[in-house]
Image (cartoon, rainbow, N blue to C red; front, side):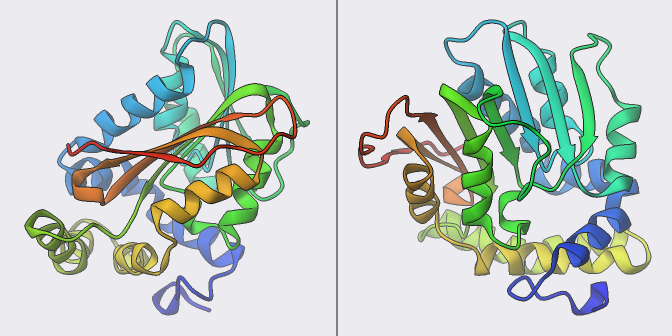
Length: 257
């Protein structure tokens, strides 16, 4: 399967790896451009949720890409050490060039469905805009939760189909029609179709409420959903249960940014 024919509903891990290797040289530029810099603010929120009430935390960031979230976590005084995992070599190469001067971040090759880390090793586990790219995202949540110590925090930042209303309608039009065109102007070669894949992958992905149930099924409680940018971006967080007791229903908040 070539990148041009990549279908988000029939993708393989090799397809996704090839796509991200292709877009790695312009990935950071396009993130800032296409989100008008809002992705930086969203990652700050993810850091706040992951590290709330913690000190000396060890953190794993899955699907770390070029390392933006891992480095934001490393820059926080509450963090002792962060390791970013990704299975796309070109993305990891970019992350290594940006490694934090604090010396609190490392990067390693790792598939988010089979991470090379022992169970219960981390105080927090995060993933930003990578969950929907997994072949089995529900299994991915289970794998991320496996890495958490009891009481540890799981945080997912992801795109979702936006809600109804004028804001959601306008953003959906931007996502479907404007974003792919900007991607074509800035990207090169086969990478241009990654920005057609992006809106298609969002539209075919689970809803935020469904992802919250995956948290509960993986052993997390106090699951919280925050809706950003008219619901087009979701921040989902939960705490790894210390016992096998049944989790409470996810809580939901509206937070438009």
